[in-house]
Every structure is written in structure tokens, then in C-alpha cells.
Length: 76
Image: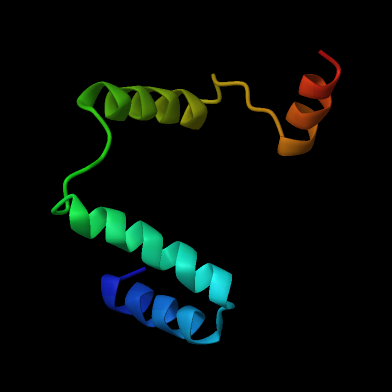
């Protein structure tokens, strides 16, 4: 999806979103703006995300559904 198309979809969504969604989106944008567009992640964190993403794409990373994770943690 192009940036222009994505921007249009975001604007359409925001125009119809509930107040709590608008507040959440604003909060994320404010954090981004306050950081001068710099990432809030360290280079080590970015590397770890990239490493795990590559493993996931290769089918070498086991994932768990949210419901399964909740079930497992509640039995501990």
C-alpha cells in the first residue's frame, strides 16, 4: 500500500473512531513527535526484533495464541 493510500485509510478510520481510539492514536503520535522522530528502541532491541522476525518468516519460531498464553499463565 502506498503512503498516500495508507494516509487516506488512516484519516477515514480516525474520522469514525471512538474517543478512546483517538486518544490512543494521539498518545502514540505525541510520543513520536516528542522524540523528534527518533526510535524509542535501542539498536539491540531493533536487532532482536529483526532476528525474531527472520526466524518467524522461516518457520523456526514457535508462537502462542493470546488465549493459550493466558491459559498457561493462569495455571502457574
